[in-house]
Length: 181
Image 1: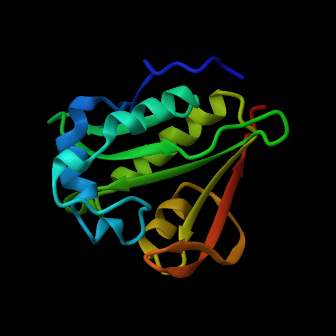
Image 2 (image 1 turned 90 degrees about the horizontal axis):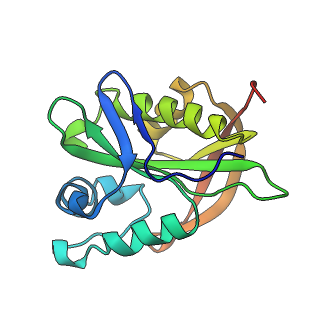
Image 3 (image 1 turned 45 degrees about the vertical axis):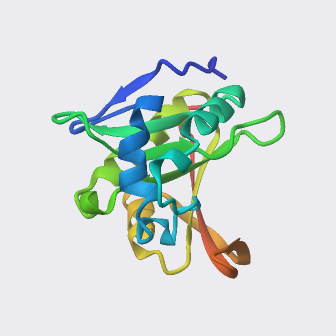
């Protein structure tokens, strides 16, 4: 396993993935936490006021637990349009890592998440991870398409696996194995 380094920057054709900073607060609030449509499937709280966003606490938690929490930034405008993160980190028994993401609604259907996800998968594999996992709530067809475009393989459905918005949801899981290990 490579050493955790929050200074890593990943560039794609249109995006920069870099560790989230306090200064990303406004863009994250507008694009994610203040949009009920985005939060329909992304597990975070809807917030009325930007001051309620505990971004520093989230950043510190991820750094302390050696999880990558990247802002998705447009190369041309430097606007932070979303986030992509390592939801879990490998340990001595399970050398896998789950990836999650969210992007502002005005940036949907432009291929940004697929571009970020492909880069994140490659990055996580470069850390020595054996298996990358992604999942989506059944019914989140946009996320399903992103996962499939990244070449991930359907592993199965867990019935009533997630309790969110005061109801249980079935969740579909996908994976990719690191062929370069």
